[in-house]
Amino acid sequence: MGLFRYDFWQMNVSTEKRNERIWATIRDIPPGSVASYGQVAEIAGVPRGARQVGYALRHLPKGHDVPWHRVIRSSGRIAFEKGSRAYKEQAKRLMMEDVVILNGRIDMQKYRWQPDLDELLWKPSAAWDGE
Image 1 (tube, rainbow, N blue to C red):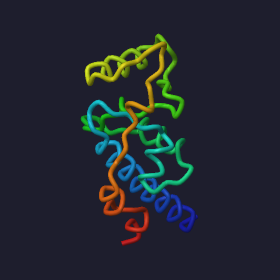
Image 2 (image 1 turned 60 degrees about the horizontal axis):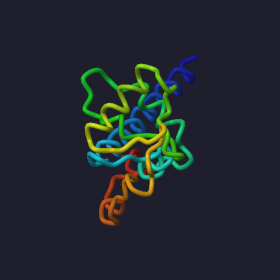
Image 3 (image 1 turned 60 degrees about the vertical axis):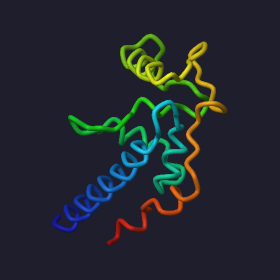
Image 4 (image 1 turned 90 degrees about the vertical axis):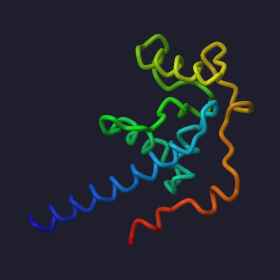
C-alpha cells in the first residue's frame, strides 16, 4: 500500500509540473492572439497533449493570471457550447482584444500566435522537471 501511495504522489507532482508548464505557455500568448490546445501542448513539451491542456485549464487555481480565453480549438472555434455562459465570456474577452469572431470561428491564419524561434528554443522543457 505504501508503494501505491508513493506512485500516486509522484503522479500528482508530475501532473502539477505539467500544468505549470502549460499555464506558463498560455501566459506567453500575447493579447490579440490565440493558440490551439494542441499548439499549447506542443510548445509546453506535452506532445499530443491537447486533452491535458484542457485538463490544466479546468484546474486553474483561484486568483490565477492565465489568459485561458486565448486557447481555442484547432479549427478556430471556441470549445464551449455556443450560447453557454463560458462561450459568451470567452468570446467577450477575445473581442475586447480585437480578435474577430465570425460565425463562431476565429481566423487562425490571422490570429494564431506564432512565437519566435528564440522563445521556443529557450523555453523550459519537460526535461527540466527532473531536476
